Length: 313
Ligand code: NAD
Ligand code: UDP
Image (cartoon, protein in one colour):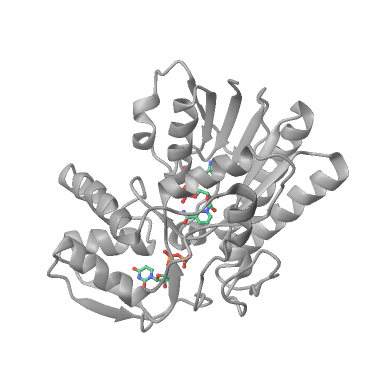
């Protein structure tokens, strides 16, 4: 059945891929974005589409729309961007959640929250399961993002318990793919852009910290399954359990781009988690979901995207 769906942060990396999938499925989509980190380029192909509506708006300001489903993705996701204005990041997570939940309550929409593996902080349980409560520094430089997202989860579950709002909460692990912002400072985009320009590859720390990288198409499939699954709120981890050190990632990017870049080491930012890997047993059980795109294939597609972006600059 055709639904009216609001996607906040719909002009961003993940949001624009989600909007594409929803439009393909025949839904009417409202994309709400203030273009802080998102761009019109990500959604330009949809402008003028009869099923697509763009709303330039800040999610921290009150708004009213009539919809059946809400995906709340509005929030800068890269450390460089979320630390640029830390107070605004907290406001976006917390006030954005309150505005979206209030709307969901009024119009009886099902509402989805893009939470994050950062709720686990620098974890001492590995791999991370949903029942793990995390190890977050509440006053560190990542706290604006981590704690903002934790409060958002709290609000989602309180609106659910107190007002019966129909919620879905996903904890997203590091995701990469086309439409990442070339300058957003995240590791995959940084390494690929550096490699394609034969610049030094900047590994922070000694590169032994780990991350697990999920290709965007796999992630969006997980979003859709969770949103449309009955009687399951989450939180549920969605990510790729393939775990790599950052040094291994640098070497693989150099190999796949055939770059002449050299690896250099820079100081590790504070509170940078040492390890991160999702336990996806719950997603497998409840959603029948698991990732299908290998790191090599995902990097190939992402490298092709950045090559085209850099050639057009
Ligand atoms: P992104 O920065 O590309 O997208 C965020 C979007 O939200 C942008 O279009 C931005 O302009 C918009 N936005 C930011 N503040 C806003 C505000 N106040 N009002 C309206 N719009 C606003 O990041 P992304 O990678 O697409 O992340 C999307 C969501 O997924 C975020 O909530 C992020 O926390 C979450 N997430 C992403 C990852 C990942 O690896 N990409 C991992 C964990 C969680
Ligand atoms: N990183 C790096 N070089 C870079 C960018 C990031 O070594 O140019 C490291 C960063 O210190 C972290 C990991 O790569 O350990 C992932 O960083 P990212 O900002 O992509 O996401 P995070 O998972 O830390 O939020």
